[in-house]
Image 1 (cartoon, rainbow, N blue to C red):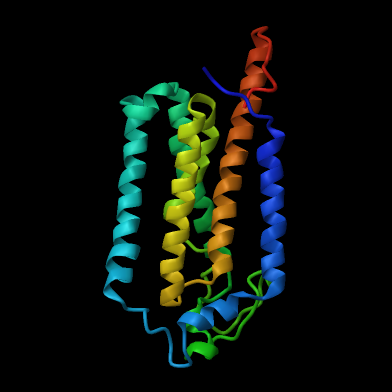
Image 2: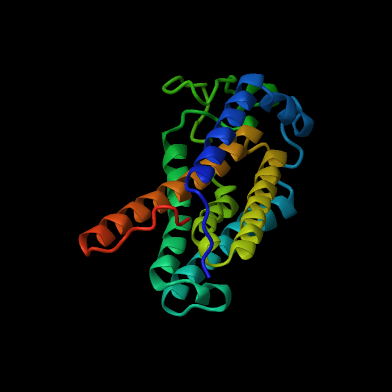
Length: 237
């Protein structure tokens, strides 16, 4: 049995979290949090073996392996994924990949440097808002949003697929993806690689990517049903 949820509810969550993120940026809390881990001489945890090899390199590799498994499951589903149609399993896998790609594209266009590049922490860059597009801060840039956190947050997009076939499992999946992304983001913040806002914006971008993909596919499904004379279920989640 597939559950229903008004399509407006995820959109409302998206807009509410956007307002909260804008409020966070306006409050200027990023530097205050960065100073909890950094000093004028740099970030003591920057080269910590556990943060570098386990939380950064290891977690990234594990995330890619899991994504490869999701693509394989389109053809050979296991466990929970057996409850999904093939096109839903494809949507799930491609949504996760899309989240990673969106974050990567925004990151490549960003002129914002990482905290460890700032003068306040022994670097050369000055503090410039990541929304000051085209304004260079004197550093290498390319640090907004948090690319590494997308290794966890990209999986939040799967909620849009799972919620129809297995609502309880979808909630657990969403909570796990959010926790993983936040943990990976915090690890990078301890190293001086990102601000908290970088991590939060990554979460929002991955969620919004999932919403956009789901809305696009639902719209195509409605149009297809209309062409063959079926009655579209507009209130189906």
